[in-house]
Length: 525
Image (cartoon, rainbow, N blue to C red):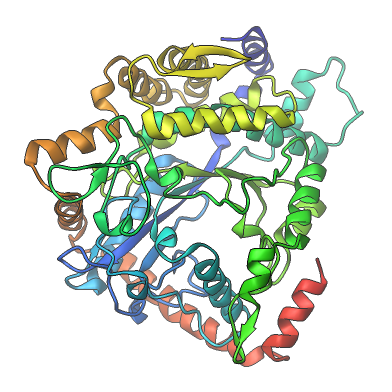
């Protein structure tokens, strides 16, 4: 553990500010493909009984009509978030009949690009914009990339923590920086340290070492054949986060700067206005139909692929980066977590408590600005762990030196354990330190990594990627299909009906045609 981290933890404890950490909040967004019992992508529309994908606060779709996204409210405990996710799955299974919610991040059997229906959000201007944005993703990257699912983990410290932390760090208290600026600086420091250490989450929680053969059909790749049907890399952790998944060649040479909120919004703004010949060649319209929202490097901010984002709840129709710069960072969104295929909703409270501890560790550590050459180092470390993370003796680059990944992991986990101890002291239990101990055991026993367990299961049962996916998905469906409490189901039914009414209200309130709406939206960049 670094001396600075130890000093900050001591300051938190001595000042009593650590008690405010009980107010840490988290929200979880969990994606999952709807499939047939045979493991094929569902061709049915988003079920009406689940509500409007445009306006429902907790059940929506991502790229595809078949890609469900379950969103929890901001929750005070990990258990509350997991229970809410389970309830959303139970509610959905009462509607889906024989369909499954796919257990893995990498998709089920795909019958080619034409088998992937793009999500529909109705006829309102904002609904059309969401749909055409996805049409643009299709033309830019292809559909199969967009069928990958994952966990997005939203994390924030309580508002009352920040003034207490400022006072604890200052003697006497300093008025040299506003609370809002201090909060932004701290969150961006967290982000920089996350990007330095993101490989650790891929190692510990990566659970996509294999893919269905249909996913790589026609692609050049270096994957090996599974005993059954499918492909894998023997030491891989998260193919979802590698070249086959959330990467973009178009964005690879463009660097968004995380050194401050100003540099972040400025460089992201450049990408929104940067010409890109390949996208210009696609065109914006053909025969009166939109092919993409525009022909810039990024259609909108969300197109920028990043494993972590500074976020703020933004009103509909407002540019997120503008609103972020105006009002400051509200929370952090972690985007590199695979679905754990062995868990009913892809994540559990133990993992959530570790992520909370890890993110607080990233915030409290010293976090110097990231120079240009460090971007390549951090990305290369992630790539190595994605493809070979469990390989014995694998070495990563740290401060221009080579260090064994497992040794670095244990050193980092020692620091995270100390942070977890402070969180447990605030809560009056030992659940955070226990969560870190579970991860330390993985380093000492690599067969416990989810990626290793997945491959071992497939090999032991001599089944294909698709067969294993169906087996686990059916198990989760059975575990989650018990009837809901009458009051909980009635409330979710009410929310679904209200979401349809809200969508109709939005559609009836549009005052301009879509071309005008879009022109006005981009005129605000």
